[in-house]
Length: 387
Ligand code: FAD
Ligand code: UDP
Image (tube, rainbow, N blue to C red; front, side, top):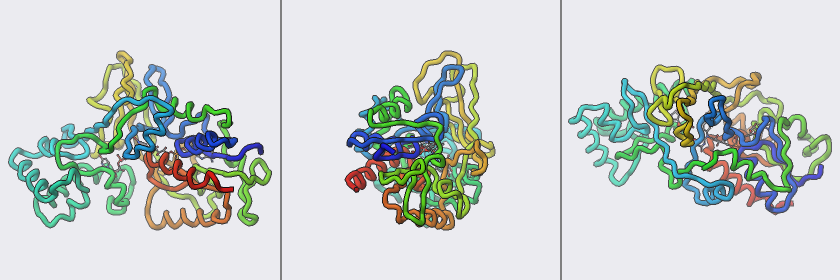
């Protein structure tokens, strides 16, 4: 094989590493089993001309200046702060739950009492974890915590994860805080922007390098064979001494020999509608009895103007079945058992020194886009000089 580096998967993990190695003068082959690059950030145009994110809504936000500066090489950005409302007891209220949500759902005297308590107990803090409120010694705060837990978290989480909320990893629940004020942004990061011409342009520009060859509709199964006994990687049947970067699921790579790694998946249902707008903002969460978790209306994310037409997306969570070719493994499910299984797969590969794992699937992590790019940039620095 006339390449120095083989990258499996053309999402942000794979494309960042491919781009960095190509810039470093290495010949890179990047493959993806899908018919397009861009991983889960891929966008497509519907018949009504509305641009949508095919694999669910993707909003860029980061505290890593390095990541933002890196992406700026491949696209222009426009300022976009994401706001979400939740449909609770027949009212639309800001999510994360903030003082405005409180005022909308509690009568004036009670909401004033809770606000004062929160400001007193959590002095100098902008936000607090719902789990901390639940454990408060203060009766008013604890009761308020139980209310928010029930109205915002319990039902949404039951739908999303299909296990009791107590069994969901705390880091997942803590992604959505309770805001101690009127900040109504979904994310609190320093940099909040969307790519001016969409995500596809970023990926096209990242891979636009004479040192990079792209092969689509190509599953790594057809290309790589790992000989664990001999500690070798065969690429197209020949021993390969270059670097192999793998960003797909590990269980699949190793033929599920210890059993499948559990994931949650989504049934993404798009609806094209003959109206200018369907809902008041880009995302409305449904932390209640509806079977979907949220509805996204894409025109708000892109600022696209398409008269009398709009497209919405309803996300219906479902259990991932690795045998079902329609299913996408979206969310790793953290618990001790699953992490042990993941580590067992990693252990098999520990002696193969030119094989690297990167990304949401390969590392079995709940990475946001920026965290994946950061991890890929760090990995590149770690391994670029290795023989
Ligand atoms: P992916 O984007 O999944 O790319 C992996 C690629 O590898 C895929 O193209 C796949 O086809 C390919 N592949 C897999 N196996 C093989 C194989 N055997 N052979 C060949 N190719 C293979 N993050 C944010 O920052 N903001 C958001 O708003 C946001 N929204 C999200 C919404 C949803 C519904 C989900 C599920 C995630 C969201 N994320 C968001 C997270 C974001 O999608 C991930 O951080 C990002 O996709 C990770 O990039 P990746 O390259 O690791 O994986
Ligand atoms: N969550 C919730 N209610 C909401 C929003 C989020 O209970 O209205 C919980 C739920 O468990 C979810 C987690 O917080 O899985 C993380 O939410 P986030 O919006 O970050 O999920 P993502 O956008 O990654 O799907």
